[in-house]
Image (cartoon, rainbow, N blue to C red; front, top):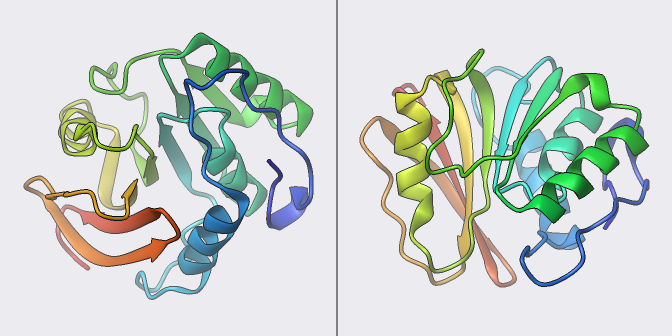
Length: 188
């Protein structure tokens, strides 16, 4: 795995050993971040100064990619110990530890947020139907800023229904993955 854009472009990232995580492939991640950088998501840059939340973060690649592109802070959450260790190591490797909060927690039962986030990534295990549940839990715990942009990764053929309070903006299939772009709190 490597950072595909921004100030850390080309830097290698560690991935946890074993098969408990499924990292988003470099090609799919590059496509996702190109959509975020060049897509029509309103009149704002989605990265610059953003507070980012990365649930089911694995080794933290999505959140760290956002930092590389100008985000101010990222919260990485995963309940897998090896994944959290890799995420912490990657933040330190990039010199970004002071801009990263690692929370070894189950994303379905998050703690109360210290501050809301404007960009949210959810990459749950495919086929588990967890994305809807996690979006609802994050909303209840104050993790989502008004008009937050949320990106949900599912399997290309996996069913997904956005919970109340979310508007689907667009969907893109990239290989075996589907990225669903949602706006929280109305206002597309």
